[in-house]
Image 1 (cartoon, rainbow, N blue to C red):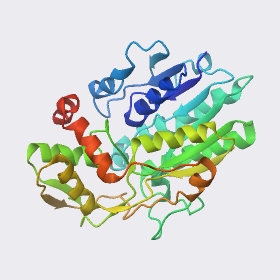
Image 2: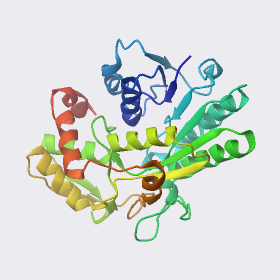
Image 3: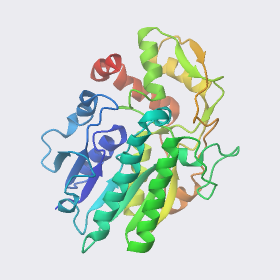
Image 4: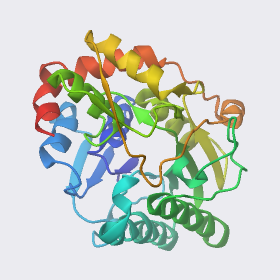
Length: 322
């Protein structure tokens, strides 16, 4: 049986988490549907470092139809990262995919765990999008959750399901709200990936709105460290913010992109998009106290690392093809 199961293992964060679990000696089952939100080639590249690892098993399929009971043992920790991502894509006719992949799939995972004679633990990946447009200043976990996008609504619904199964079915759970994650393997639709791709091509960077937005950018290794700490903690039914701890204006972040790539940047402003909050800022005090969470990678350093992947031979083909 497996020590850990990672849903969404071929994704940006899931592949990093899976590697860390393997490195610490876990037997890991990775599940991924290889959904066509972005290319299967890119997702396959995310798993390149795991090829031939005897402690890693990959299962391709939809969480709603796979025999999950065969994979979850009494000592298994399930890291539920699989989801339909993207704020802007959640509007319109694609909304059903967010319901299916973010709500229905989460319920199937929880029901399978709850029906087992002996249960493991579940760590649920949520999002800062559940807060919507928060007041100025760092946002604590007890702030009102008022999503302003269908994506945020489905992630909040997943949180409610996790809490429900914890309270009424006795599951051991913890939920993590991620704030603007970046780093190597970032999805092609995410901001820094798009910014670097524009710089690489000599194109202007498209910025939604006036560019004065604030974001709490969080390097992927810091997110993984927080997820692992939460999964190993004794907390039950809790939710924690995982952020970078130092919000930065978008215009400043774009300047750092140019410095990392060693190229001048130009900006083209386009219409602001529905569902994008004006600012995000994580109050990580609770995660620091309880989980000893301490983000270590600065935005400047993290962008240099992302450019080394995306602008180098490993990431160039995927970057330019996206």
